[in-house]
Amino acid sequence: MDDHPLWAFALALYGRPGAAPACLALQDKAGADVILVLYLIWCAETGRPLDAEAVRSADAAVAPWRAAVVAPLRAVRRAMKAPLLPGLATEPLRDRIKAAEIEAERLALGVLAASAPAPQPSAPEPLAAANRYLDLYACHLGRPLPRGPREALLRALAGA
Image 1: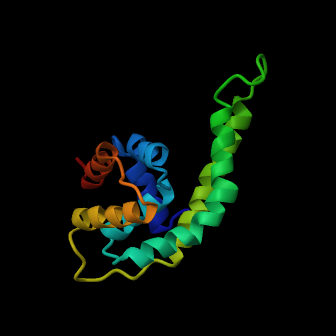
Image 2: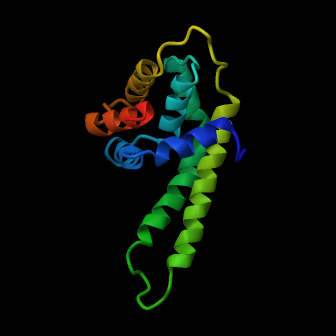
C-alpha cells in the first residue's frame, strides 16, 4: 500500500503549500474527515465519478475505523502537546502515537482506494469535479465547508 497511487497522491497533496493547514481547518472547523477529503479530491483528479450515494458509502466504509481508531489516536497525540508529566521526556511516545495515527489513516485510504470507481475517459475537469465532490460531502455532513480552507486546498490541487 505504501506505493498505492491514492497514498502517494495524499502525501503529495498534503505536502503542497497551504494544503495541510487547509485540511486541518476543514477537520477542526467543519468536522470533515481529512482522509475522506483527500479521497474525494483524488477521485476528482483521476477522473473517478462520484455522486451523493458514493460519498455517503465512502464515509460509511471508514466511519467505524475513524471513530474507534483514528480519532482516539489523534486525541491522545493532541493531548500530549501539553506537559502532562512535567520533567519527563514524553515526545518519543507522542511521535510513536503520531506514527500509529498516520498508519491508521493509510489503512483507511487503502479501504477507500479498493472500492473507488474506475476512472472515466469523459470525466469533468479535476478542479470542477473536486468542487462538486466537496459540495456533496458538505451536504452529507449537513454543514458547509469553510470557504477559505476549501479554496486553499483547491489551490494546492491546482499547484498554485
